[in-house]
Image 1 (tube, rainbow, N blue to C red):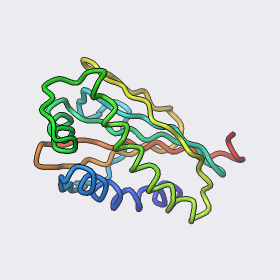
Image 2: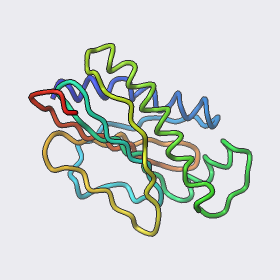
Image 3: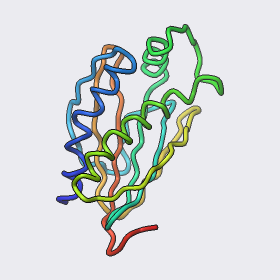
Amino acid sequence: METMQTLLMPLLETVPHTFNTLTNTPVDVLGDFPQSYKKILPFDVAAVVTFQGLGARGTLALCMSKTVYLAVLNRMLATEYQEIDEENCDGVAELLNVIYATSRTHWNKAGMGFDLALPIVIRGESPMIGLPKGGDARELRCNCEFGDFSLLIHLEETLMRTR
């Protein structure tokens, strides 16, 4: 899907740049893997944003284990959180918000017309994200010094503007 490639290219740069800038944590994108809807890297906290624009709609989800999230968050905020709770769970949304906003600028220059969107947070023991079954789904598997995490991408092309 050509539109998926247009979506992926900025993310390959934006994810490492966001983590390095906001958390002083170097990140490597290990690969872009087609998502089977069943195999997702286990996670304890995620931020999810849905977006729509000219001829496409989609979802981004930044998923992290407790260990990775708390290490990144503690570095970002110079704190020592031991648990993910109401006070600190929005850090993953802040990271995804910057990733989406930065990538959106590139996508819209390519004519995709994606709207502003705000992430929501999912957390708990063994949470799950159900992506729509249509369209194309990918997982950007990423690695930092604290472990692996994922950015899930789902995109569905539409015949008209989805508003």
